[in-house]
Length: 440
Ligand code: AVJ
Ligand code: FE
Image 1 (cartoon, rainbow, N blue to C red):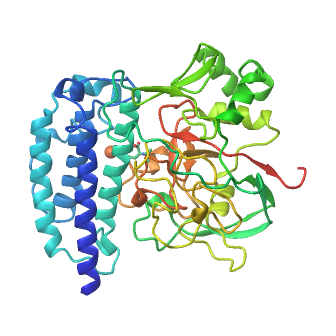
Image 2 (image 1 turned 135 degrees about the vertical axis):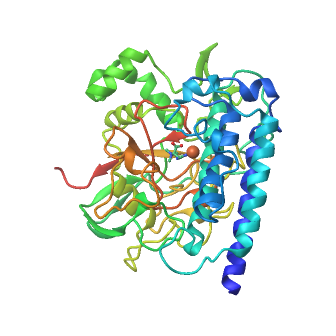
Image 3 (image 1 turned 90 degrees about the vertical axis):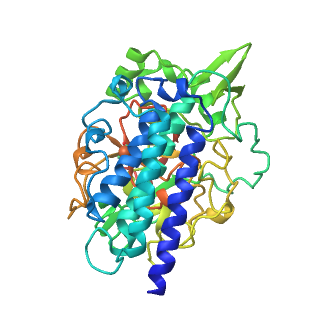
């Protein structure tokens, strides 16, 4: 009982925290005309995300869990992501920012009332261990990261608090070795017992990998500029067939949001134009650009299993942990998460977050492209609905791992799987390289 009391307090605090962040990204930073505008055909109007997270919360915590009637059955269809493509949402009769805020508050009040009486005991129900609350909290955090991508695509003056903070407070020594060897052998991938893990992270299963090398840091802007200076964008031999097709069709020759001016590379970050910082991990590159860089460097992208082994396997005990550093919840010493800095940090800034093998910053900073297409693990079972994961399996999505500086600590871990199309660049994604230990 005491345990559940603590869990409920944590759930209520996390619900409150995520809503505050959603409000910073909407009501507190932009006026109504910008909230209802389409900043990019890739993204929803921000006011859609705002009411969508409330509608999702209502469906799962008010209706499915507490068994109550729908507050606004008429709006479900507007906020169903499968009914309306992102580019079309601006044309729907959406709730205004004021209406969305009132609706969300109404939902939240019912959720907090129901939480008081909820039985979070054992069993396989939605409520067991607080799973469905974790699902809803993580969902809103994921939309907060999506809303931040909308802010990045938005034209205009900076509006986000913290945009002028520098990364200078994060020195940290660069990792001593550029890459480490992960010995051949089995490890436990995925999880059976992580209380907030999504269905796609389950079940735990043994994967036996040959030995491989993996970089201790993500590829940084200085590295990436060498690839560009070496004509990387003009050499089909570095690119996959699909990648070269994308490169020629799109005409892209640099990461998104970069521009070359008066002999130097600048980037636009949330409306602020600044020189590209050489030591920061490169971000806003497509899977195809990541692949081409890796090939040019004589390496390749890690598979998803290689990434996860590097991020959680402890060779001295044989155990797989929730985080590279072990089981401790992420703190600001472990990783660059949670939109504290609005940018990735240089290599070595989080020595306390390194893995037992000495691989740095696997969690936080930038999502990392892997060489694996999103799929279900052996023994996968839908829980609680197929539209979260299953409908995206084997459908041309590439797995992303680790979380970015924009990801909240409760919405990532070493088993967490994200996915997107290989051409996408608005997300906060970079990559690290790997290579075989034995010639194939
Ligand atoms: C896991 C980030 C790919 O945003 O499409 C949000 C998360 N699912 N609402 C997405 C999600 C339903 C999902 N990603
Ligand atoms: Fe959603």
